[in-house]
Image 1 (cartoon, helix red, strand yellow):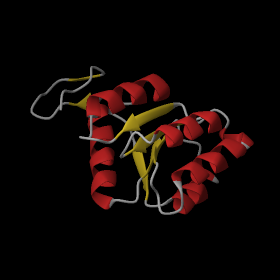
Image 2 (tube, helix red, strand yellow):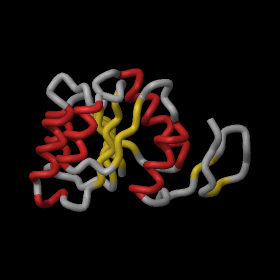
Image 3 (cartoon, helix red, strand yellow):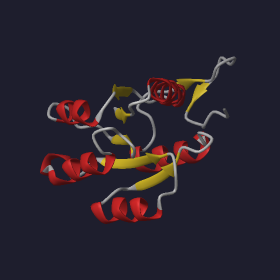
Image 4 (cartoon, rainbow, N blue to C red):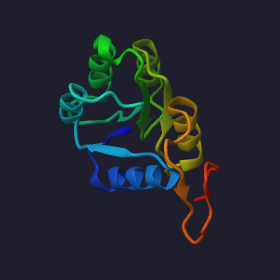
Length: 139
């Protein structure tokens, strides 16, 4: 399970759809506090965390890293801008990857998801095809 923490509904929906197409189960959270509430009960393989959450993406990252139960949880910060100091601070806190939203470069994000979460637990179906498998779909 991959937790998607994104306060923009359209971006959150796009991420969930793309995760599904890759064979992953995505669970949405519309803000950091909702994500922290979910994390009390579940331990996702990966968290995709928006940097610019209204309740502070870096603050949510700090909360995740301070919870010993979540030591093995990987986190990708998904950010609209390069934010050199923000990237540096996220790395200092312990983020596993920092991906720019930019043009929603799915290939780079998908590569980080596969690297950090491992292969999906279920096979995915490529739209318009009868084949299933673990090879990345081109979008």
